[in-house]
Image (cartoon, rainbow, N blue to C red; front, side, top):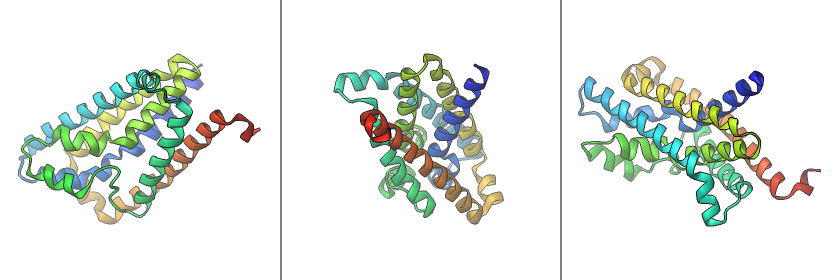
Length: 215
């Protein structure tokens, strides 16, 4: 059982952290908080990370209920979520800001706002459609297999939120140490991993919707 918990925890964390991708959010965070002091930036980072955790946890817990109300099956959502993640992954590999995460208009609107912690930082930049879809798919898998598989998912969301705060709170240092080249390399690697996760979601969804295809 311990091995299963560790395996599920690693799977959930790698999927959620890669799609939230706090390192890619650093340039947007610095641009939107350029007029803030160090203390104000840390407070903004704290609230953005907390908002990210609450949003993802809420969607993960309530996702199955929403599906039942709308008549959407988990396999269908796995395929749809996989396609969305694949689009984001392609943009990450190309080191191009993905419109599926945040648009230029949202960045400009965020820079003009006094409080950017929840909108647009927490949502849609960090807890956007891709990360929400990932959490819902992982929670759906937990409900299908064993209920306690949901614990590693919630834990992964929490750990991702903590790391997101640490990365954003030290955003200036992260950008200076890693540099643009280093951040691009990291984003490409994360994009490759996310592409594999996206394809796995689609394969799982197709296998559950059409079992005869994978026999």
